[in-house]
Amino acid sequence: MRDLFSSSQEFEKIPMTDADVSILRDLDTHAPYDLIFYRLLEQTKWQQREMNMYGRKVLQPRLTAWYGDPSRTYVYSGLRNIPLPWTDLLRELKRRIEDCTETTFNSVLLNYYRDNNDSMAFHSDDEKELGPEPSIASLTFGDQRTFVFKHKIRDDIPNVHVPLSSGSVLLMKGKTQRFWKHAINREKRFCGPRINLTFRHIYTRDELDALKDREHRDRQLGR
Image (cartoon, rainbow, N blue to C red):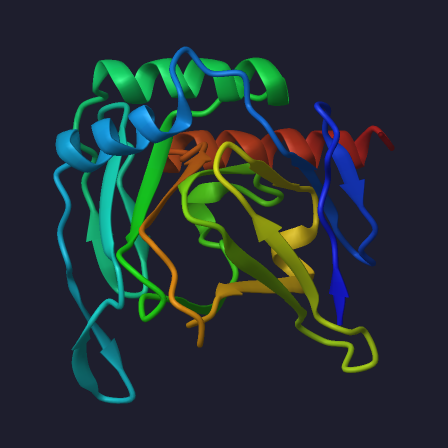
C-alpha cells in the first residue's frame, strides 16, 4: 500500500502504471472552503437513489446530484441522470477547474458523503458517453477521505491510496479508466461530511460518431 499526498500548489504526478493521475492540494477559490461546502450543501438538489445490486434494489450509500449543459444525460449503474441547470456557484467552480486543468467540462456529478458510513464501491468511469480516454477532475470540500485505486488486470500492482483533503483536485486522464478502478471505502474512524464534485465532458451520440470518424481517418493517414 502506498500513501501519496501532495503539499505543492501545482499538480503533482502520482506514479501509477497504465495511468495518468495527478493531484493539486489547494485550489485557488473565490471563498473559503468551508463556506463553499455549506453553500453546496444548501443549494444542491440532493437525492438518494435506488440501484440494482445482486438482483435487489438498494439505496446508494451517499447522496448525489447531476448538473450540466442541456442534453448531457449520463447513465451509470443503471441510473439515468438528466442534468439540472448550472447554478452560479457550480459555474464558478467549473471555470476555476477548467483554468487549472486546461480542460473543458460540460457536466458535474456531486456526491455527498454524510459521514464515515457513506461510501462509493470500486468502479471505472468508462461509460461510452465519456469518450475513449476521459479526463475527470475530482474536487473535494469538507472532511478528508481516502481515494483508493485498484488495477483491473495486474494483481502484482499494489492499491494506491490518495488522501483527499478540502480544496484538493484529483485529475484522471488518458488510459486511467481503462486499467484502474477507484473507490471511497467506509472508514472505521468517524468522519465528518464531505462533498465531492467530479467534472466531466459528456459526448452526445453525434459527437461520439464524429470522434470515431476522426480516429479512423487518423489511422488511415498513419497519425
